Image (cartoon, rainbow over all chains, first blue to last red; front, side, top):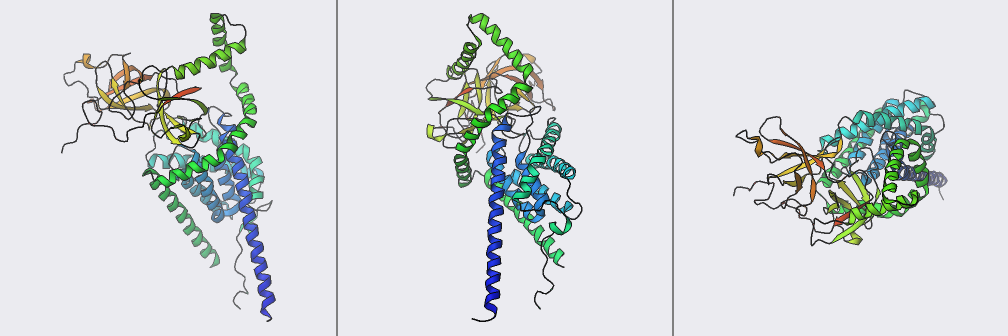
Length: 201
Length: 298
């Protein structure tokens, strides 16, 4: 047994631990997302305000962008959009594309700017939902879907954003827990681990 | 340096995800079979869970509906009272059952299509998103012989077409959807044309392709208001299914074609039951004298 073997063993253990943690995060995200999807498909197909339901899959995608950052958040948003696409009448990939674009942008511009407050999350979710619904409608029209952009669009954008902002009070802690993000977001916590200065020496 | 690298990788990942979405979009547009099958499988797997949650949360959603649709319910109640008087029924419960029975009979008493096998289905859910108001789920699937493209009707007329089919569940795109193009025949003039739903108005249908404005200026050549409109033999659906009645005829913007607005025969917004016509749909509309498509020159 050489001197480097215990070190390698510790590193392997850490790697395994990290892998398990990633799996747990994935599992938690799936649970939270499925819960949101089921609510959207059942409860919110009837419970609407002026005919408009919240956009829970979009809410999960936005919160993932905010709490997990643009890199991980965009992947989560893509999966959320893809799953939502399966239930929509629009072509597969439309919601996924719009979710990715908005989650990445939102995650990117808020990464180093803000600290976390409930009001701030609420506002960001409102803006994010409005952007997501608009991008979805615009992309839909671009790929030839009729009837996405009409007089009803501003109403849908406003009410769905309001719904999502309100529901973010409940959903934000759930997504934060699922994404493995700390309770209070700060610059240092949001940043991904940088390479050690001792690496390679 | 590390930040720049991270940012580059991050953009690379974004690009990869968007390209994946674009690829899926393209495959979906081309009707790539395995993609449809995969989507159908996912829905089949989740359907029992969705149904169970629906059963649990249904009563809660009903409370919301009662709270916020009080006025609608009151007018419906008045209608039911009138019906009660007319039928001399004993109580409201009987009236509700009668209403359900009538809706079922409305859906099954289809008289305008002969020799086509039919299947009665219950409408399970309306739209789940905010942009698919014209989509509904019904409780029959390929297990029952349903296939994409089949016509869905009630005794009033054409309701829509089957869009996606899972094992025991299908979605129907209503005739009010602006994307659903239907070949129709105007009985008054015998003209065949193409129409689609009117955006923002689920009770209207617009016939805007295939009808020329009379060159002579003789307005008597236009279809009369109130005249019936049915599916044409050249459409993808069985012929002569009522679509609606002509509400107005106007010249289109260029003044060369007719823009015919039709009041839909079937109310596609509040459906309880529908009938699926189990006739294998034709993918290509036939070219001929009754076709909305002009014959191709060789």
